[in-house]
Figure (cartoon, helix red, strand yellow):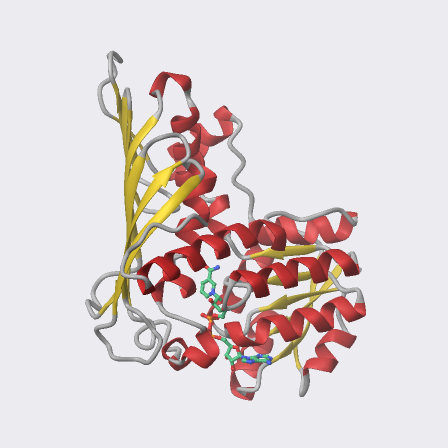
Length: 340
Ligand SMILES: NC(=O)c1ccc[n+]([C@@H]2O[C@H](COP(=O)([O-])OP(=O)(O)OC[C@H]3O[C@@H](n4cnc5c(N)ncnc54)[C@H](O)[C@@H]3O)[C@@H](O)[C@H]2O)c1
């Protein structure tokens, strides 16, 4: 029998991971699923051939690896239980409300010796993978400037319909921690390390502790400067979108569509002029350039089956948590520069 996978939480992202596992073709058996919203657990179980369980313990008892897909405030406790039982664990981002708790969770999985992976999935994106490849190309020169915008309608409504994202006791904070921790992670992973941040934030929806607009100016260790802005708005007609523009000394790049592109770029002196890649052509270019774009769920169960470390790990998530903390500290201080 393949890896028996259990689920804690049967909401939106649990279903995404179940689809990822299903599509992976890996030897996986859907085991138990628990959600205090029993109807959700039943629906998930019926959809994926899992068993709806009345308790967290029943899920832990019946699996070889567990996905923690609950709202954020439950992550640490459930990961601690996986550690106690020596079970491999995939935990959604953000790991916790702040960098110190994320660090403690990374230390806990390491001390327990359990295989661990975090849902920082943009690291598997073909668009960001190829952007990283083009930015690292010596022909591009150094990064001078970045303009990174991330926007989403506030997810207490619409497809997400998750009231908990408006509750700081369960979400920890608003758009930056809950959603754009992905951005600060991929910014450093694909473009370069951040030396310091200076930020401002706003709260239009009036949800206590849930900011819905944050703008950050950052210095890159390599000498460039950039801006990042994240917004939870009410333009329901828009899907969740990111747009990233990078000016290098000799190359200009624009990423629109954070998974399949389009990614376009122009390099000075190249006859081809502006080049554009999207969809299958982008994936093919990734393959040709040796840019890995794995299915994160396949990668997790392969690591579990082989008994080897998974990536991105909890340890990899500590740094973006520290960056998020630094941005919040700067905004609380009226925009003074903070080194993460
Ligand atoms: N990686 C990504 O791109 C991505 C995308 C969306 C969400 N997320 C993260 O995934 C997590 C869940 O988000 P979602 O969109 O699936 O939310 P959701 O509201 O759709 O589902 C969360 C579910 O967790 C359940 N739950 C709460 N406590 C539980 C417990 N102790 N045991 C079992 N179930 C419990 C809730 O009842 C709810 O059904 C959050 O941490 C979120 O930040 C990550």
